[in-house]
Image (cartoon, rainbow, N blue to C red; front, side):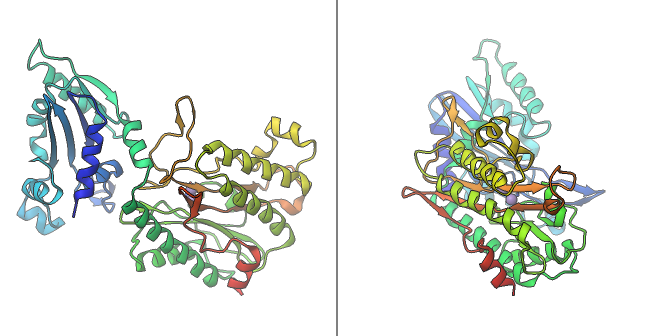
Length: 430
Ligand code: GLY
Ligand code: MN
Ligand code: MN
């Protein structure tokens, strides 16, 4: 059942030189206040290589003296703690169910780990990712080195790219889970378009999204939803979500559920009252064209900057056409004039994390698309209230975001179910 995780561990150690080890820490419980904790979420890479979901765990995979071993440190079995907080696998269960070669309790880490890394010429872990962990590793290394003055020194190497680039290419299991996450989120957006009314509060609509995610199996949002009425859409990371939604204004909702640990990420912008005004529609159509043209750039052979450049080109041309920017296209592009209104990147990797692991460059160049990668495409135009433009444009913010799988044939839009065509949106909201 958990073979996929074991396979990933084997693939990972296969990428490392002989006499090396890799350490991957799990997440700890995080407290919201006093002793009230947030719902636990496992660290994504730890989950990717273990499938194990208990707080305070750690894994080590090593290939020393031609012996490949996987070891996990987990919370101990404890009857009282299990009465309060629920079932624990304990070391025995971790070996049996998650197919590690060895397991210990996490209280034994200090004692045992230095012995296990002793003999490694190289010790890999992702630098700077978990608070306090880098210092902890250094202490274990010092302890391991002090065991034998003449033994091989342990060299520390950052594993971020190694792990991230494995996660970047999704296998079939992962693609199926992400498709399910995308479907749940797509349905929530469709239901919300039908449900929203002027006078509702942003947080009421946020709750509507969360309800729709949870009822289909996505209990948590993959990130805090952005539910932004009117000019709030121009605050890129608006999460206050506490204002009234007004007729004649647009609503930008960036919301996606997490399903079985995997993220989806969808943005739609639609009119609160069900009808776009002329100005809103003019901006919307530019973003829609940028969105479609950028998605067309997502294919094997292209790199991530092809979609970026296409989105900037379409947006700048559109802004010139409707008179928001004045001047020659080439001149305005070289000055980056459009960046006042489109200031973020066109997309990011999507997977276990909404902004997923994986490099954006390779061999001194931009990362090329490969089958199995999933990227968002999310161009936008944001005209703040203080922009130096005609009054009629102020406070309009539009983003359209879909999740795109790179395939051998081109790409597959995993979130295309939610309408983007303004007439279709108006029809759905009528
Ligand atoms: N929802 C976060 C993003 O779109 O990047
Ligand atoms: Mn995104
Ligand atoms: Mn988003």
